Amino acid sequence: MDRKKFTVLDFQRKKYEDKPITMLTAYDCTMARIIDSAGIDAILVGDSLGMVVVGYESTIPVTMDEMLHHAKAVKRGITKAFLIGDMPFMSYQISNEDAVRNAGRFVKEAGCEAVKIEGGKEIIPRIKAIIDAGIPVLAHIGLTPQSVSKLGGYKVQGKTAESAAKLIADAVSLEKAGCFSIVLECVPAQLASKITNKLNIPTISIGAGKECSGQVLVTNDIVGYFDKFVPKFVKQYVKIHDSISKAVSSFKEDVESRSFPDEEHSF
Ligand code: KIV
Image (cartoon, rainbow, N blue to C red; front, side, top):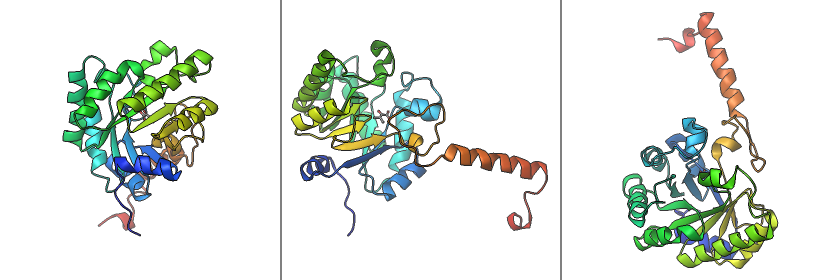
C-alpha cells in the first residue's frame, strides 16, 4: 500500500491506535532521504545540530540561521515524514513577537510543519502565540539541554516527588495550551508512563522508557557517527565513525603508495 504523508493529525491517531510514533533527527538532505525512505513518521531538525554536527560544546550557541540552513537541506530529502524545526536558545525566550517570527521562519523559509520548544508552564504564552499564528508546537520537558546551567548538568529529571509533580503539572498545562505532543527527555520510565496515561496527546520519549507514545533519538548517535560520548539511553545500531575512519586511512595509504587511482578509476 502506498505510504501516506504523515501529518500532525497522525500523532493523535497513532496514540489512539496504540501504535508507537517513530522520530529521528536529521541535519542534511542525504540523511533525511534515508530516514524518510525507511518510513520514520517524523524528522526533527534538532538543535543537537550544534553538538553533533557543528562542534559546539552545548546547544546554547546554535543560531536561527544555522537551524534554517540545515532545515532547508533536510526538507529537500523528505517526501512523507513530518518535519519539525527545533527553536534554538534565545529564539523564543524574550518575547511572543520573537517566538512567532522565528517559528514562522521555520515554516516559511524551510518548509517545516511544526516547531519544537523547550520548557514548561513558564513558556506557555510563547506556545499559545505560535499556535495562534497557525503553527503546531511540539513541547519538550524533563532534561531541557538549553537550560543545562539552571539544571546543573545533563541529569535525569523528576526524581524527587516535588520535581515529578512539576513535570506532571507542566505536561497537563502544555496539553491545555494546545501542543500536539510532548517530548519527555531523561525522565524515569514510571513517571513518563504516568504522564502518558494522564494526557490525551502523545508523548515522545528520549530516555523516558518504553511506555511513552513514541521514541526519538539523535540519528548521529544511533549510527555511531558522533563519538564524543554515548548517552545511556542511546542504542547504537552501527558504528559508522569507525568505518569512515578506516576508509579515510585506506585512502591516505593508497594515495601515498600511488596505488590509487588505478586503471579502474582512471579514464
Ligand atoms: O535537539 C535535539 O535533537 C532534541 C532531541 C529531542 C533529540 O531536542
